[in-house]
Amino acid sequence: MKNTFDAFASEIIANPYPALARLRAADPVSWNEPLKGWLLTTYDDVKAAQKDSRFSAERVKPFTMHMAATKRPELERMGTLLNHWLLFRDPPAHTPLRRLLIDAFTPRAINALRPRIGEIVEELLDPLSDRNQFDMISDFAFPMPATVIAHILGVPSSDVPKFRTWSNDLATVIGNSRQVPDRFERGARALFTLTDYFRTTVSHRRNARTKGVLVDDLIAAQESGGPMSEEELVASCILILFAGHETTMNLIGNATLLLFKNPDQWALLRNDPNLISSMVEEVLRYECAAFVIVRVANEDIEIGGKRISKGDRVFLMLGAANRDPIHFDDPERFDILRKPNRHLSFGFGIHFCIGAQLARVEAEVAFKHLLPLMKDFEPVSDDFDWDDNFVLRGVKSLLLQRRAVAAA
Image (tube, rainbow, N blue to C red; front, top):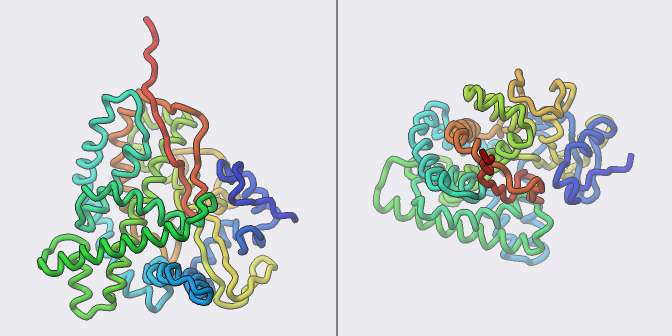
């Protein structure tokens, strides 16, 4: 079969699901020439691969080695810094680092943050209620989770606007964007800046002997002879900042867009706000903010009659798995009443997203406050500008305008 999935074609960026459905039905384990890797598109294969130690999360190492061989020291340094991220580590190095971070994101710890999250949401929405137009992404969906994660880390909320620029540039590398020709250079500069920022933050808080926020806990663990090096401490702060707001921003934006595009579901939610939690899960399934997980084969592997060679990149297509008709009834329907809803949007196995509960709570609190506001607004246009980021899926902006009042 000729592979028709061109991840960076404009029609695929806007709506990848018909092409993924065809691929899943006809060639579920397929080589993709533009991406130079294998696409897994069924629910069972995507789930199984995340449990299989033959697939490595250390996908940045080959890039780093290539940059060293081609004498590009700045990009080699970028790769070295990214290699410290928990996201790109395998056991045994992955295990103790994850254990250090996971305590900060337990359901109990996150539920304790609900009042503060509510305050942040109200602070951001209050000035929007008097406006005739605003951008859901830049005015709310980005600053809300970014401010929450700043609170968790213990960095000033006044720095949130700077995080937006740095994260955007870093996301072009992490997400394999193709419409930004200098993405590696921009991503490297952003990562170096973030590294300097958190080195300064760690040094300041260590010298002040402060306590009470996540950075302090990581410093204490590192000073007590724990498994985290200084470089890993700084890298963990950057990862928490980046991952802690980027996907939640897309979750909120995608949810808003889907509710406006599906007025029957929007009516259900308005009539019963208790459905917010179920709505969030369906958004995660239907338009997952983390669209792809990337792995590298540690050895030759056979899946579905195809031979994946050692060193090959493998793209676990969460967006396709979450619409697999074998596991979901009427999968192309956006249904906020869907139960069960065992989507894979937070991953599976040892790399299951440690921030899953935080993302869920943030979205739930956000929409509890957004519902009264959204009834008075509508999208300015039906033409939405989806980011070409292959790994992270969301719109670049979502302009909303106040609905016209019908004449008496």
